[in-house]
Length: 549
Image 1: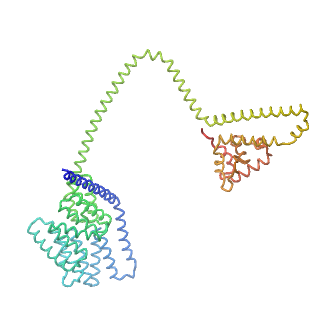
Image 2: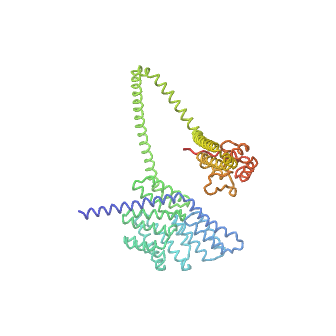
Image 3: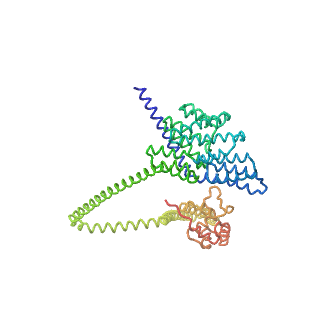
Protein backbone atom coordinates (compact mmCIF):
# COMPACT_ATOMS: atom_id res chain seq x y z
CA UNK A 1 0.00 0.00 0.00
CA UNK A 2 2.82 2.40 0.89
CA UNK A 3 4.61 1.64 -2.40
CA UNK A 4 1.39 2.27 -4.31
CA UNK A 5 0.90 5.60 -2.50
CA UNK A 6 4.51 6.59 -3.18
CA UNK A 7 4.12 5.81 -6.89
CA UNK A 8 0.95 7.91 -7.10
CA UNK A 9 2.70 10.76 -5.26
CA UNK A 10 5.76 10.53 -7.54
CA UNK A 11 3.64 10.64 -10.70
CA UNK A 12 1.55 13.52 -9.35
CA UNK A 13 4.66 15.51 -8.45
CA UNK A 14 6.19 14.84 -11.87
CA UNK A 15 2.98 15.92 -13.60
CA UNK A 16 2.78 19.16 -11.59
CA UNK A 17 6.43 20.00 -12.37
CA UNK A 18 5.92 19.24 -16.07
CA UNK A 19 2.80 21.42 -16.17
CA UNK A 20 4.66 24.30 -14.51
CA UNK A 21 7.40 23.99 -17.14
CA UNK A 22 4.80 24.11 -19.94
CA UNK A 23 3.11 27.16 -18.40
CA UNK A 24 6.49 28.94 -18.12
CA UNK A 25 7.38 28.09 -21.73
CA UNK A 26 3.99 29.36 -22.93
CA UNK A 27 4.70 32.70 -21.25
CA UNK A 28 8.12 32.83 -22.98
CA UNK A 29 6.43 31.99 -26.29
CA UNK A 30 3.84 34.76 -25.90
CA UNK A 31 6.54 37.26 -24.96
CA UNK A 32 8.47 36.21 -28.08
CA UNK A 33 5.29 36.59 -30.16
CA UNK A 34 4.87 40.12 -28.80
CA UNK A 35 8.41 40.95 -30.02
CA UNK A 36 7.95 39.48 -33.50
CA UNK A 37 8.52 42.85 -35.18
CA UNK A 38 11.96 43.17 -33.58
CA UNK A 39 13.09 39.82 -35.04
CA UNK A 40 11.62 40.74 -38.43
CA UNK A 41 13.52 44.05 -38.34
CA UNK A 42 16.77 42.14 -37.68
CA UNK A 43 16.02 39.91 -40.68
CA UNK A 44 15.28 42.92 -42.91
CA UNK A 45 18.48 44.58 -41.73
CA UNK A 46 20.58 41.54 -42.77
CA UNK A 47 18.85 41.50 -46.16
CA UNK A 48 19.32 45.24 -46.67
CA UNK A 49 23.01 44.88 -45.81
CA UNK A 50 23.31 42.29 -48.57
CA UNK A 51 21.38 44.48 -51.02
CA UNK A 52 23.66 47.42 -50.26
CA UNK A 53 26.51 45.42 -51.85
CA UNK A 54 24.91 46.09 -55.25
CA UNK A 55 25.98 49.72 -54.96
CA UNK A 56 29.50 48.65 -55.89
CA UNK A 57 29.60 49.32 -59.65
CA UNK A 58 32.71 47.20 -60.07
CA UNK A 59 30.84 43.97 -59.27
CA UNK A 60 31.02 41.24 -61.88
CA UNK A 61 27.89 39.38 -63.02
CA UNK A 62 29.18 36.29 -61.21
CA UNK A 63 29.49 38.29 -57.97
CA UNK A 64 25.95 39.61 -58.40
CA UNK A 65 24.80 36.01 -58.81
CA UNK A 66 26.49 34.99 -55.53
CA UNK A 67 25.01 37.98 -53.65
CA UNK A 68 21.58 36.97 -54.98
CA UNK A 69 22.19 33.46 -53.63
CA UNK A 70 22.86 34.88 -50.18
CA UNK A 71 19.68 36.98 -50.38
CA UNK A 72 17.72 33.90 -51.49
CA UNK A 73 18.99 32.04 -48.44
CA UNK A 74 17.74 34.87 -46.16
CA UNK A 75 14.37 35.13 -47.90
CA UNK A 76 13.84 31.35 -48.28
CA UNK A 77 11.61 30.83 -45.23
CA UNK A 78 10.65 34.51 -44.90
CA UNK A 79 8.96 35.53 -48.15
CA UNK A 80 7.93 33.26 -51.03
CA UNK A 81 7.49 36.10 -53.51
CA UNK A 82 10.85 37.76 -52.75
CA UNK A 83 12.65 34.39 -52.87
CA UNK A 84 11.02 33.63 -56.24
CA UNK A 85 12.03 37.07 -57.56
CA UNK A 86 15.75 36.59 -56.81
CA UNK A 87 15.79 32.96 -58.01
CA UNK A 88 14.34 34.06 -61.35
CA UNK A 89 16.96 36.85 -61.48
CA UNK A 90 19.69 34.25 -60.99
CA UNK A 91 18.20 31.96 -63.65
CA UNK A 92 18.34 34.89 -66.08
CA UNK A 93 21.93 35.70 -65.08
CA UNK A 94 22.96 32.03 -65.39
CA UNK A 95 21.47 31.79 -68.86
CA UNK A 96 23.16 35.00 -69.98
CA UNK A 97 26.47 33.64 -68.72
CA UNK A 98 25.64 30.26 -70.28
CA UNK A 99 26.92 28.76 -67.01
CA UNK A 100 25.43 25.27 -66.69
CA UNK A 101 26.31 24.99 -62.97
CA UNK A 102 24.54 28.27 -62.19
CA UNK A 103 21.53 27.21 -64.30
CA UNK A 104 21.20 23.87 -62.52
CA UNK A 105 21.76 25.42 -59.09
CA UNK A 106 19.09 28.08 -59.69
CA UNK A 107 16.58 25.55 -61.01
CA UNK A 108 17.16 23.34 -57.97
CA UNK A 109 16.54 26.37 -55.74
CA UNK A 110 13.32 27.09 -57.66
CA UNK A 111 12.20 23.47 -57.38
CA UNK A 112 12.86 23.49 -53.61
CA UNK A 113 10.87 26.73 -53.18
CA UNK A 114 7.90 25.42 -55.19
CA UNK A 115 7.90 22.14 -53.25
CA UNK A 116 8.01 23.90 -49.88
CA UNK A 117 4.90 25.92 -50.81
CA UNK A 118 2.92 22.87 -52.00
CA UNK A 119 3.41 23.41 -55.74
CA UNK A 120 4.63 19.82 -56.27
CA UNK A 121 3.73 19.43 -59.96
CA UNK A 122 5.64 22.57 -60.92
CA UNK A 123 8.57 21.49 -58.75
CA UNK A 124 8.74 18.10 -60.52
CA UNK A 125 8.55 19.79 -63.94
CA UNK A 126 11.58 21.92 -63.03
CA UNK A 127 13.52 18.85 -61.85
CA UNK A 128 12.68 17.03 -65.09
CA UNK A 129 14.37 19.85 -67.02
CA UNK A 130 17.67 19.11 -65.28
CA UNK A 131 20.12 16.60 -66.74
CA UNK A 132 21.05 14.52 -63.72
CA UNK A 133 24.26 13.17 -65.23
CA UNK A 134 25.64 16.70 -65.61
CA UNK A 135 25.18 17.66 -61.95
CA UNK A 136 28.11 18.15 -59.59
CA UNK A 137 28.36 16.21 -56.32
CA UNK A 138 26.84 19.03 -54.29
CA UNK A 139 24.01 19.73 -56.73
CA UNK A 140 23.23 16.03 -57.06
CA UNK A 141 22.63 15.92 -53.30
CA UNK A 142 20.23 18.86 -53.65
CA UNK A 143 18.54 17.09 -56.57
CA UNK A 144 17.84 13.94 -54.52
CA UNK A 145 16.88 16.01 -51.50
CA UNK A 146 14.26 17.92 -53.52
CA UNK A 147 12.71 14.71 -54.82
CA UNK A 148 12.75 13.26 -51.30
CA UNK A 149 10.89 16.32 -49.98
CA UNK A 150 8.31 16.25 -52.80
CA UNK A 151 7.42 12.57 -52.50
CA UNK A 152 7.44 12.62 -48.69
CA UNK A 153 4.83 15.40 -48.74
CA UNK A 154 2.78 13.78 -51.52
CA UNK A 155 2.76 10.49 -49.62
CA UNK A 156 1.66 12.27 -46.41
CA UNK A 157 -1.12 14.36 -47.98
CA UNK A 158 -2.39 11.87 -50.55
CA UNK A 159 -5.75 10.29 -49.71
CA UNK A 160 -5.69 7.51 -52.31
CA UNK A 161 -3.95 4.41 -50.95
CA UNK A 162 -2.51 3.47 -54.35
CA UNK A 163 -0.97 6.92 -54.85
CA UNK A 164 0.25 7.01 -51.26
CA UNK A 165 2.15 3.72 -51.74
CA UNK A 166 3.58 4.90 -55.08
CA UNK A 167 4.82 8.16 -53.59
CA UNK A 168 6.19 6.28 -50.59
CA UNK A 169 8.28 4.05 -52.86
CA UNK A 170 9.65 7.07 -54.73
CA UNK A 171 10.44 8.69 -51.39
CA UNK A 172 12.38 5.62 -50.21
CA UNK A 173 14.30 5.38 -53.49
CA UNK A 174 15.48 9.00 -53.43
CA UNK A 175 16.17 8.81 -49.69
CA UNK A 176 18.40 5.76 -50.21
CA UNK A 177 20.23 7.52 -53.05
CA UNK A 178 20.78 10.60 -50.91
CA UNK A 179 21.76 8.65 -47.80
CA UNK A 180 24.46 6.76 -49.69
CA UNK A 181 26.09 10.05 -50.65
CA UNK A 182 25.96 11.94 -47.30
CA UNK A 183 28.64 12.06 -44.63
CA UNK A 184 27.20 10.17 -41.58
CA UNK A 185 28.17 13.03 -39.29
CA UNK A 186 26.15 15.67 -41.16
CA UNK A 187 22.80 17.10 -40.04
CA UNK A 188 21.08 15.90 -43.23
CA UNK A 189 22.27 12.31 -42.70
CA UNK A 190 21.19 12.28 -39.04
CA UNK A 191 17.79 13.73 -39.98
CA UNK A 192 17.15 10.91 -42.47
CA UNK A 193 18.20 8.22 -39.97
CA UNK A 194 15.96 9.75 -37.30
CA UNK A 195 13.05 9.89 -39.74
CA UNK A 196 13.50 6.20 -40.58
CA UNK A 197 13.50 5.20 -36.91
CA UNK A 198 10.40 7.33 -36.36
CA UNK A 199 8.58 5.85 -39.37
CA UNK A 200 9.36 2.36 -38.03
CA UNK A 201 8.11 3.39 -34.55
CA UNK A 202 11.58 2.89 -33.07
CA UNK A 203 11.04 5.97 -30.96
CA UNK A 204 13.86 5.50 -28.43
CA UNK A 205 16.38 5.22 -31.25
CA UNK A 206 14.85 8.21 -33.01
CA UNK A 207 15.11 10.28 -29.82
CA UNK A 208 18.76 9.30 -29.39
CA UNK A 209 19.53 10.62 -32.88
CA UNK A 210 17.49 13.73 -32.12
CA UNK A 211 19.56 14.28 -28.96
CA UNK A 212 22.68 14.43 -31.12
CA UNK A 213 21.08 16.89 -33.53
CA UNK A 214 19.73 19.02 -30.69
CA UNK A 215 23.17 19.23 -29.07
CA UNK A 216 24.69 20.90 -32.16
CA UNK A 217 21.86 23.38 -32.86
CA UNK A 218 21.04 26.68 -31.20
CA UNK A 219 17.63 28.18 -30.50
CA UNK A 220 16.80 30.95 -32.93
CA UNK A 221 18.00 28.98 -35.97
CA UNK A 222 15.97 27.12 -38.60
CA UNK A 223 17.83 23.93 -37.74
CA UNK A 224 16.80 24.11 -34.08
CA UNK A 225 13.20 24.77 -35.13
CA UNK A 226 13.21 21.71 -37.39
CA UNK A 227 14.92 19.42 -34.85
CA UNK A 228 12.53 20.32 -32.02
CA UNK A 229 9.51 19.99 -34.35
CA UNK A 230 10.63 16.49 -35.38
CA UNK A 231 11.17 15.63 -31.71
CA UNK A 232 7.56 16.62 -31.02
CA UNK A 233 6.51 14.11 -33.73
CA UNK A 234 8.22 11.32 -31.75
CA UNK A 235 6.32 12.28 -28.59
CA UNK A 236 3.11 12.52 -30.59
CA UNK A 237 3.56 8.89 -31.70
CA UNK A 238 4.36 7.99 -28.08
CA UNK A 239 1.13 9.73 -26.94
CA UNK A 240 3.17 11.95 -24.60
CA UNK A 241 1.29 15.22 -25.04
CA UNK A 242 3.24 17.09 -22.36
CA UNK A 243 6.60 16.57 -24.10
CA UNK A 244 4.97 17.07 -27.49
CA UNK A 245 3.71 20.51 -26.39
CA UNK A 246 7.08 21.39 -24.85
CA UNK A 247 9.01 20.85 -28.08
CA UNK A 248 6.33 22.45 -30.26
CA UNK A 249 6.63 25.54 -28.03
CA UNK A 250 10.43 25.53 -28.30
CA UNK A 251 10.20 25.10 -32.06
CA UNK A 252 7.69 27.97 -32.34
CA UNK A 253 9.91 30.25 -30.22
CA UNK A 254 12.88 29.45 -32.46
CA UNK A 255 10.78 30.06 -35.61
CA UNK A 256 9.82 33.55 -34.43
CA UNK A 257 13.36 34.44 -33.32
CA UNK A 258 14.78 33.35 -36.69
CA UNK A 259 11.93 35.15 -38.55
CA UNK A 260 10.73 31.89 -40.17
CA UNK A 261 7.30 32.64 -41.64
CA UNK A 262 6.90 29.27 -43.37
CA UNK A 263 6.42 27.30 -40.14
CA UNK A 264 4.28 24.49 -38.80
CA UNK A 265 4.99 24.39 -35.05
CA UNK A 266 2.63 27.12 -33.84
CA UNK A 267 -0.37 25.90 -35.83
CA UNK A 268 0.26 22.34 -34.56
CA UNK A 269 0.47 23.68 -31.00
CA UNK A 270 -2.79 25.59 -31.54
CA UNK A 271 -4.53 22.37 -32.64
CA UNK A 272 -3.20 20.52 -29.59
CA UNK A 273 -4.43 23.24 -27.23
CA UNK A 274 -7.78 23.27 -29.05
CA UNK A 275 -8.15 19.56 -28.32
CA UNK A 276 -7.49 20.35 -24.65
CA UNK A 277 -10.25 23.00 -24.79
CA UNK A 278 -7.79 25.87 -24.24
CA UNK A 279 -9.66 27.95 -26.77
CA UNK A 280 -8.21 31.41 -26.05
CA UNK A 281 -4.61 30.39 -26.64
CA UNK A 282 -5.51 28.14 -29.57
CA UNK A 283 -7.32 31.05 -31.25
CA UNK A 284 -4.44 33.44 -30.54
CA UNK A 285 -1.79 31.04 -31.91
CA UNK A 286 -3.68 29.98 -35.04
CA UNK A 287 -4.28 33.61 -35.99
CA UNK A 288 -0.59 34.35 -35.46
CA UNK A 289 0.25 31.41 -37.76
CA UNK A 290 -2.24 32.67 -40.32
CA UNK A 291 -0.56 36.10 -40.31
CA UNK A 292 2.84 34.43 -40.89
CA UNK A 293 1.42 32.29 -43.73
CA UNK A 294 -0.16 35.38 -45.28
CA UNK A 295 3.14 37.27 -45.01
CA UNK A 296 5.07 34.38 -46.59
CA UNK A 297 2.33 33.70 -49.20
CA UNK A 298 2.47 29.96 -48.59
CA UNK A 299 -0.32 28.12 -50.41
CA UNK A 300 0.37 24.93 -48.47
CA UNK A 301 0.22 26.68 -45.06
CA UNK A 302 -3.00 28.44 -46.07
CA UNK A 303 -4.59 25.08 -46.90
CA UNK A 304 -3.40 23.44 -43.65
CA UNK A 305 -4.44 26.37 -41.47
CA UNK A 306 -7.78 26.75 -43.25
CA UNK A 307 -8.60 23.16 -42.26
CA UNK A 308 -8.43 23.97 -38.54
CA UNK A 309 -8.99 27.75 -38.39
CA UNK A 310 -12.79 27.59 -38.84
CA UNK A 311 -13.17 25.04 -36.02
CA UNK A 312 -11.03 27.05 -33.61
CA UNK A 313 -12.69 30.32 -34.63
CA UNK A 314 -16.14 28.80 -34.20
CA UNK A 315 -15.23 27.43 -30.77
CA UNK A 316 -13.75 30.80 -29.81
CA UNK A 317 -16.88 32.63 -30.93
CA UNK A 318 -19.05 30.12 -29.06
CA UNK A 319 -16.93 30.66 -25.96
CA UNK A 320 -17.28 34.44 -26.33
CA UNK A 321 -21.03 34.02 -26.80
CA UNK A 322 -21.20 31.76 -23.76
CA UNK A 323 -19.27 34.33 -21.74
CA UNK A 324 -21.65 37.02 -22.96
CA UNK A 325 -24.62 34.90 -21.87
CA UNK A 326 -23.02 34.35 -18.47
CA UNK A 327 -22.33 38.07 -18.21
CA UNK A 328 -25.94 38.84 -19.09
CA UNK A 329 -27.10 36.33 -16.47
CA UNK A 330 -24.82 37.93 -13.88
CA UNK A 331 -26.15 41.36 -14.86
CA UNK A 332 -29.73 40.16 -14.38
CA UNK A 333 -28.82 38.65 -10.99
CA UNK A 334 -27.00 41.84 -9.97
CA UNK A 335 -29.97 43.93 -11.15
CA UNK A 336 -32.40 41.80 -9.11
CA UNK A 337 -30.12 42.01 -6.07
CA UNK A 338 -29.82 45.75 -6.61
CA UNK A 339 -33.60 46.08 -6.74
CA UNK A 340 -33.95 44.03 -3.56
CA UNK A 341 -31.32 46.20 -1.91
CA UNK A 342 -33.14 49.34 -3.07
CA UNK A 343 -36.44 48.06 -1.66
CA UNK A 344 -34.69 47.14 1.57
CA UNK A 345 -33.19 50.63 1.86
CA UNK A 346 -36.59 52.15 1.12
CA UNK A 347 -38.21 49.97 3.80
CA UNK A 348 -35.53 50.97 6.31
CA UNK A 349 -36.06 54.61 5.34
CA UNK A 350 -39.81 54.32 6.03
CA UNK A 351 -39.11 52.64 9.35
CA UNK A 352 -36.61 55.36 10.23
CA UNK A 353 -39.20 58.03 9.46
CA UNK A 354 -41.69 56.30 11.73
CA UNK A 355 -39.08 56.06 14.46
CA UNK A 356 -38.23 59.72 13.88
CA UNK A 357 -41.82 60.76 14.37
CA UNK A 358 -42.00 58.65 17.54
CA UNK A 359 -38.97 60.42 18.95
CA UNK A 360 -39.99 63.89 17.82
CA UNK A 361 -40.73 65.18 21.30
CA UNK A 362 -37.40 63.92 22.59
CA UNK A 363 -35.60 65.64 19.73
CA UNK A 364 -37.35 68.92 20.51
CA UNK A 365 -36.33 68.59 24.15
CA UNK A 366 -32.72 68.08 23.15
CA UNK A 367 -32.74 70.67 20.36
CA UNK A 368 -31.10 73.40 22.39
CA UNK A 369 -28.42 70.99 23.58
CA UNK A 370 -27.72 69.92 20.01
CA UNK A 371 -27.44 73.55 18.91
CA UNK A 372 -24.98 74.18 21.70
CA UNK A 373 -22.99 71.08 20.75
CA UNK A 374 -22.92 72.17 17.12
CA UNK A 375 -21.74 75.63 18.12
CA UNK A 376 -19.14 74.11 20.43
CA UNK A 377 -17.91 71.78 17.67
CA UNK A 378 -17.59 74.74 15.31
CA UNK A 379 -15.64 76.68 17.88
CA UNK A 380 -13.43 73.67 18.57
CA UNK A 381 -12.72 73.28 14.87
CA UNK A 382 -11.94 76.98 14.58
CA UNK A 383 -9.61 76.68 17.55
CA UNK A 384 -7.94 73.63 16.04
CA UNK A 385 -7.39 75.51 12.78
CA UNK A 386 -6.14 78.52 14.69
CA UNK A 387 -3.83 76.31 16.70
CA UNK A 388 -2.43 74.77 13.50
CA UNK A 389 -1.85 78.22 11.99
CA UNK A 390 -0.22 79.65 15.13
CA UNK A 391 1.69 76.58 16.37
CA UNK A 392 5.05 77.96 15.33
CA UNK A 393 4.24 81.44 16.65
CA UNK A 394 3.04 79.99 19.97
CA UNK A 395 6.22 77.96 20.31
CA UNK A 396 8.33 81.08 19.76
CA UNK A 397 6.32 83.14 22.22
CA UNK A 398 6.31 80.48 24.92
CA UNK A 399 10.03 79.98 24.73
CA UNK A 400 10.77 83.74 24.61
CA UNK A 401 8.47 84.42 27.60
CA UNK A 402 10.17 81.69 29.63
CA UNK A 403 13.61 82.93 28.71
CA UNK A 404 12.64 86.57 29.30
CA UNK A 405 11.29 85.81 32.78
CA UNK A 406 14.35 83.77 33.67
CA UNK A 407 16.79 86.47 32.48
CA UNK A 408 14.96 89.25 34.32
CA UNK A 409 14.76 87.16 37.47
CA UNK A 410 18.51 86.61 37.27
CA UNK A 411 19.11 90.34 36.73
CA UNK A 412 17.00 91.19 39.80
CA UNK A 413 19.09 88.75 41.82
CA UNK A 414 22.32 90.23 40.44
CA UNK A 415 21.17 93.81 41.14
CA UNK A 416 20.26 92.85 44.69
CA UNK A 417 23.66 91.18 45.16
CA UNK A 418 25.40 94.26 43.69
CA UNK A 419 23.30 96.55 45.94
CA UNK A 420 24.33 94.56 49.01
CA UNK A 421 28.00 94.65 47.96
CA UNK A 422 27.87 98.48 47.49
CA UNK A 423 26.09 98.90 50.82
CA UNK A 424 28.68 96.72 52.53
CA UNK A 425 31.59 98.73 51.07
CA UNK A 426 29.98 102.01 52.07
CA UNK A 427 29.22 100.77 55.59
CA UNK A 428 32.78 99.51 56.00
CA UNK A 429 34.02 102.73 54.41
CA UNK A 430 35.79 100.86 51.61
CA UNK A 431 34.88 103.50 49.05
CA UNK A 432 38.26 103.24 47.33
CA UNK A 433 37.75 99.52 46.72
CA UNK A 434 34.27 100.21 45.44
CA UNK A 435 35.65 102.85 43.08
CA UNK A 436 38.23 100.36 41.73
CA UNK A 437 35.49 97.82 40.97
CA UNK A 438 33.56 100.41 38.96
CA UNK A 439 36.64 101.29 36.88
CA UNK A 440 36.82 97.81 35.17
CA UNK A 441 34.37 96.59 32.49
CA UNK A 442 34.86 92.96 33.51
CA UNK A 443 31.30 92.74 34.77
CA UNK A 444 29.96 94.11 31.46
CA UNK A 445 31.95 91.56 29.46
CA UNK A 446 30.69 88.69 31.61
CA UNK A 447 27.12 89.88 31.23
CA UNK A 448 27.61 90.28 27.46
CA UNK A 449 28.88 86.69 27.19
CA UNK A 450 25.90 85.54 29.21
CA UNK A 451 23.60 87.58 26.94
CA UNK A 452 25.11 85.92 23.82
CA UNK A 453 24.79 82.48 25.39
CA UNK A 454 21.14 83.04 26.34
CA UNK A 455 20.39 84.43 22.89
CA UNK A 456 22.12 81.49 21.15
CA UNK A 457 20.37 78.88 23.30
CA UNK A 458 16.95 80.48 22.89
CA UNK A 459 17.26 81.08 19.16
CA UNK A 460 18.62 77.61 18.34
CA UNK A 461 15.93 76.01 20.46
CA UNK A 462 13.35 77.63 18.19
CA UNK A 463 15.34 77.36 14.94
CA UNK A 464 17.56 74.26 15.46
CA UNK A 465 18.46 73.98 11.74
CA UNK A 466 19.24 77.67 11.26
CA UNK A 467 23.00 77.30 10.74
CA UNK A 468 22.58 74.44 8.26
CA UNK A 469 19.80 76.23 6.33
CA UNK A 470 21.75 79.50 6.20
CA UNK A 471 24.82 77.66 4.84
CA UNK A 472 22.57 76.15 2.15
CA UNK A 473 22.01 79.71 0.92
CA UNK A 474 25.79 80.32 0.60
CA UNK A 475 28.35 79.22 -1.97
CA UNK A 476 30.75 76.49 -0.88
CA UNK A 477 33.71 78.77 -0.14
CA UNK A 478 31.49 81.22 1.76
CA UNK A 479 29.89 78.73 4.17
CA UNK A 480 30.24 79.60 7.87
CA UNK A 481 32.22 77.16 10.02
CA UNK A 482 31.78 77.41 13.78
CA UNK A 483 34.65 76.95 16.21
CA UNK A 484 34.67 74.20 18.84
CA UNK A 485 31.87 74.62 21.46
CA UNK A 486 30.57 77.68 19.57
CA UNK A 487 26.80 77.76 18.84
CA UNK A 488 26.58 81.03 16.91
CA UNK A 489 29.18 83.60 15.89
CA UNK A 490 28.74 87.31 15.15
CA UNK A 491 27.68 86.80 11.50
CA UNK A 492 25.11 84.17 12.48
CA UNK A 493 23.74 86.33 15.34
CA UNK A 494 23.23 89.24 12.90
CA UNK A 495 21.18 87.06 10.55
CA UNK A 496 19.43 85.40 13.50
CA UNK A 497 18.14 88.86 14.49
CA UNK A 498 17.13 89.48 10.87
CA UNK A 499 15.19 86.17 10.96
CA UNK A 500 13.41 87.51 14.08
CA UNK A 501 12.39 90.60 12.10
CA UNK A 502 15.06 93.05 13.31
CA UNK A 503 16.51 94.29 10.01
CA UNK A 504 17.73 97.78 10.97
CA UNK A 505 21.54 97.75 11.29
CA UNK A 506 21.53 100.38 14.10
CA UNK A 507 19.15 98.26 16.20
CA UNK A 508 21.24 95.14 15.55
CA UNK A 509 24.42 97.07 16.49
CA UNK A 510 22.83 98.26 19.72
CA UNK A 511 21.69 94.73 20.68
CA UNK A 512 25.01 93.07 19.87
CA UNK A 513 27.12 96.02 21.10
CA UNK A 514 28.97 96.59 17.84
CA UNK A 515 29.30 99.67 15.67
CA UNK A 516 26.78 100.18 12.87
CA UNK A 517 29.61 100.09 10.35
CA UNK A 518 30.77 96.69 11.64
CA UNK A 519 27.24 95.28 11.32
CA UNK A 520 26.95 96.66 7.80
CA UNK A 521 30.29 95.12 6.75
CA UNK A 522 29.27 91.70 8.12
CA UNK A 523 25.97 91.82 6.23
CA UNK A 524 27.65 92.78 2.96
CA UNK A 525 30.32 90.08 3.38
CA UNK A 526 27.74 87.33 3.86
CA UNK A 527 25.49 88.53 1.03
CA UNK A 528 28.48 88.61 -1.34
CA UNK A 529 28.80 84.85 -0.79
CA UNK A 530 25.11 84.17 -1.45
CA UNK A 531 24.22 81.19 -3.69
CA UNK A 532 20.86 82.87 -4.38
CA UNK A 533 20.31 86.33 -5.91
CA UNK A 534 22.05 88.81 -3.58
CA UNK A 535 19.07 91.17 -3.29
CA UNK A 536 16.82 88.27 -2.32
CA UNK A 537 19.18 86.73 0.25
CA UNK A 538 17.66 88.23 3.40
CA UNK A 539 14.14 87.32 2.20
CA UNK A 540 15.32 83.70 1.90
CA UNK A 541 16.74 83.93 5.45
CA UNK A 542 13.29 85.04 6.67
CA UNK A 543 11.82 81.82 5.22
CA UNK A 544 13.97 79.53 7.41
CA UNK A 545 11.37 77.65 9.49
CA UNK A 546 11.10 77.01 13.19
CA UNK A 547 11.12 73.58 14.79
CA UNK A 548 7.72 71.90 15.30
CA UNK A 549 7.66 70.22 18.70
